[in-house]
Length: 258
Ligand code: DGL
Image (cartoon, rainbow, N blue to C red; front, side, top):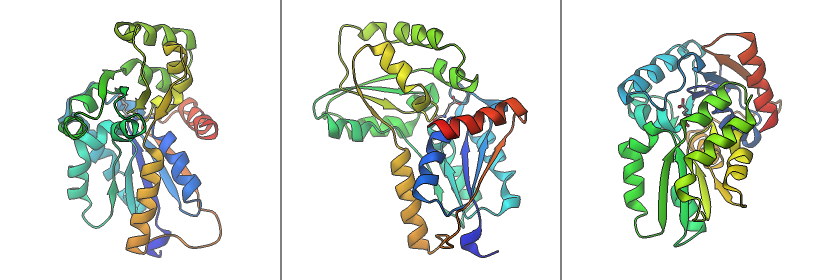
């Protein structure tokens, strides 16, 4: 197989990374993607970083048989815990990660108040703390872990009223202040943007990084000369560690819906 023909592995703890996959397919329709969600072990957010690193490295090692030409970590939590380990395990191919769009939100709202929603693992990571230091003085960032949204998406978005009530309670300490922007710092969260909006009760701008990841992937491929240039469209293969029909059906529904 020609190098450019090899697939791109897109990884998440579960279903959230489909929000990133959708952007990748839109920007790079000729590439072949293998999406792997580790729903059997989700959520990653509350887990110890060493455990997240182990699960991420082991999941991606299972995909080595497909000889991927690149790995996209479509998971903020796994990026924070495992990007370095993945780069060491796969020294010959690009490993592209994702992190919350805090800087972008503050650039759009200088001096503003930003709500940064992510997992506990992402918020506690040295990578995120470094990001906060870098934007110090540019505005106020309120960081809140929202693990309930991960469960809501993984469970097939069954109880809309329940998740809105959960979010209202979670955000109750800030009900008398307004946020100028909301960072969706977990790839599951774009699937609950409407629910977050409803819980806040006023219009707000959302910031996430999947378009940045897609652009970065595209430019790394161009630099390395590994862009698939054939005219026919590429393909999307969905895989999930919780290998049941229901999950795979929901995976495709989410992919169609983003
Ligand atoms: N989707 C993941 C992220 O972007 C993590 C969700 C989880 O498994 O807790 O952080």
